[in-house]
Figure 1 (cartoon, each protein chain N blue to C red):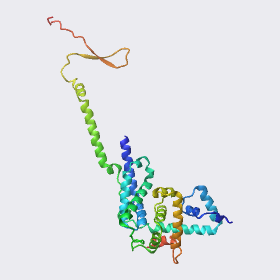
Figure 2: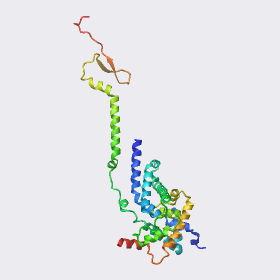
Figure 3: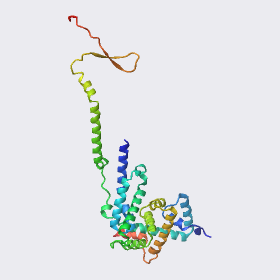
Figure 4: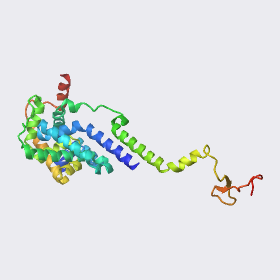
Length: 173
Length: 146
């Protein structure tokens, strides 16, 4: 019976991890701006999380565990392939995307990771601290500096549209 | 000193990120209603946050963006179910083999050759152990020489 319970929990964890794959990819891509490295990092993070038996006792920790794996994979990928990805990402991106990605590339790695985990990954400050293995105070400091820098880079330029305008323009396409 | 100056930038960022407790959020909301400048800064931060979210919304390749095909629990666990069925069948077989001899005698006794010693089931008075098997006395036929 215990074996069956473990089997069902393992299956549920795998399903949840697979459902989180698009969100994981967004975070990994926003960190590295490299599609191949992001895909590899997601694959590795999901494989590590599924094989982690500690999650059977605390399945609610799955997102944090996945982002931790993503962080490790991204750090390893950067060590092996360097940080030579284009900061602005693919040329097919729109003007807003290019501007945001360009501003994001000017942040320090810790600032970029923290703000991406909050804005794209939907993590709390506590989760970000756990994923990045930093104190919560450092995470708050990084996020505040990143927000100030992004605001300066993104909103100070003339002709910027509000997000509502951007969304309406995108939906009208 | 205005109320707005008491609000730290960290509090404003945490408010925009939705990281404040209920009491802190109500406090921040009160200050935002009183201070247009604070409200404008919060709006700017909210814009930046929304733009960052929006910028990475469409980067997912179609292969990953498509939701996984929903499958039933039994179908997706088909391999495991097959393995479990084999294990269960093996265990059942072992159990049958282990109890095979006794079960075989019990099963054959009604239709097999007559037992040498007749047995009858009686309940032992004063005991709760159920029926006991007691040998019936052998009666020699009258025409049989002694």
